[in-house]
Image (cartoon, rainbow, N blue to C red; front, side):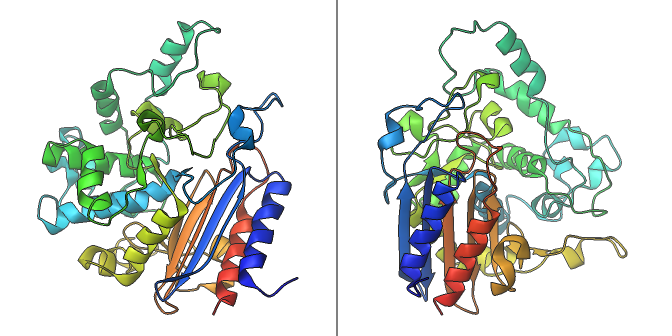
Length: 381
């Protein structure tokens, strides 16, 4: 095995593709703000679930311009949006969200939920929100099997969906447990929209993407005519076909493809730029709130938390994918096979983007690739 980190990274990506983990992969490592290694591998698509070639994207190679569905990496950008609204005093981390969502005012437990709870997955909300299931079932029932696949969510009444989301019942009291909850981030999105009167996608652009110079990061690239996008899952049960340029996550898709839990697409270079923004602590939010472990001050005494720490938006020292190499690393993963981590002590940022859910989510796991990239990154030092 070569010791050259660039060649080792290319080999790791190629092995993952050959093993069926993904069809597309891209990774980058920066030390001290300087790009040390960048590698792209594979093609935008491989096969549809029936074994046939998805489309011409099967033969299009991954490039530095390729955009990937970031999945839950979106939560890190969302956290920064919400912290920006805290900085300008539009929102308060510790004020009950019932001030903005009347649905939370009537119930004694829900009345105590705060934005800090939502951003640290300690609100007591369930992991997922199923309020889109019934309206989607109704649409599917009336859709002929030979109709064109859905491009974008077919659910038109977004206000009704948001009301359903706001009524989601807690499954535990706030601050009593840690449970990773996409529902919490999307509830925080509702809070931000109510407090500002601005659509979530506009908040993301104005508060994070434009100030950080992230020109290759946005929602729904298909709608913008961008075709250099790694394909994700074949979802015939939702009449979606092979997903190309629309968010993979079903609840985010139902909410119009622009949500706080998922929805952003980006190139590896742009995610690396975002990771560097966090590593450098470019502002108060990224310097402290997105860096410091929040759980010891939130979870009640005697309550078991996760095996890792959590800031407002990031995991801390999560060994399952950072390995033993970054015990003080901060970062996040995404269901589509994405991840990034940053380490201030080593002045390092590491990005891995794949389409692990293509053509099916039931393929081989991406964990070993994440660990291999973390080990290669550590060796760069």
